[in-house]
Image (cartoon, rainbow, N blue to C red; front, side):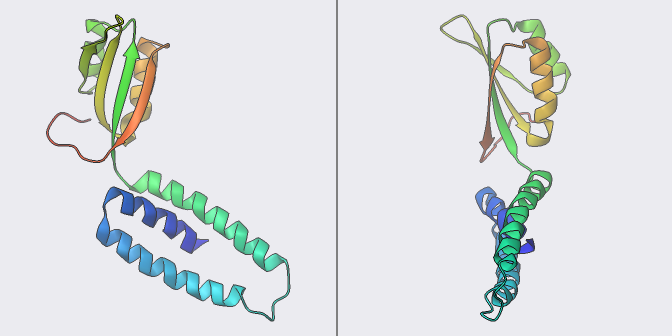
Length: 152
């Protein structure tokens, strides 16, 4: 379970470009895997519970690794909001809550808002947007790189 949890955490670190952390985790992960696998693959053990326990540990480790990654790996998100009702006063409200926002008018008389935020503020922003326009269309993408600008 621990090795799989580390594997999930390592994968997220690789995707985020954290080379040193990913390398260290990889070493620990494979060391643990080797120690566990050599026992689990022992031909003298005939019980069906060994592979069941191994599979359960693998699934649990994946879940725990996802929780660990979500909690400890920072990241930025690009949030796009399309609305037919958002106006200048709503933009001021969003800014008063500490978010930087760019506003574009679309060809179909709607407004596109573009916000770059730290992922820990997503829930707060979604709640704010929904309070302004419950029918807004929201997309969220992970951002690989940010240069300049205002980010909450």
